Image 1 (cartoon, rainbow, N blue to C red):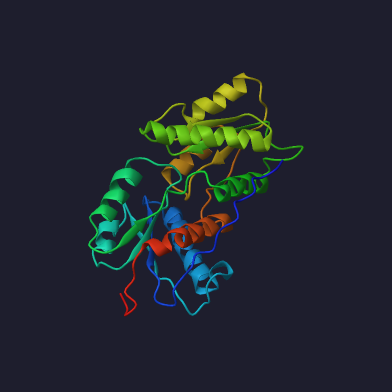
Image 2: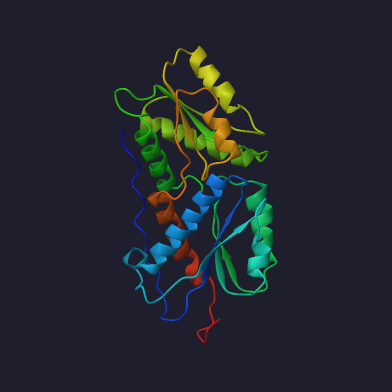
Length: 263
């Protein structure tokens, strides 16, 4: 089993002045466990920037890190961006869909200050490595690991979003060396339950649910109860996810103009 090698990053050229704010925009959840995990995501990102930013910047050049939500929780991204502070916005979504293309993009488009909107998290090498590690930690790899895997996502009516999940499932199948089916907790087909049942009908004896979600909550519970023999926890504040957030920020930081006099 091999994991993809990440591209060699090209360090951004920074000025010595203030840096743009980082705004993570997530879906929002009523789950207390989910809220704690997303709070950890923000905390670990703040800690990374309070250090040496992966060796690229000294700790004396801080980055303000905040979080906003498109549903259930507040504030929304429009409320945060209303102050006009130069901001790099990262949609903390694993696949595109209405919330990314409309809610987050719309808030950035209407913001009074300079904003750089990065792509959503997608199927970047950090995501793939985090998924492989979650599966290994849950006993889904190796001689006694799973002989088939369901890559369980939240689901979306957006066909491009569904296609992302299926393409990632194909990538995971190549890496893991077992069949991997993309499936969904809601909205899209196949459902996670149907995907597990289909693999059972094909003769697979040990099926893993590879949870392609950031945080615990309603969708994660659905995936965990879809009938697989084991289910991985959501990706949450996995170090690879923090690496990706830092990389996204660094790639887009210079696209935001910052007033050297202090915003």
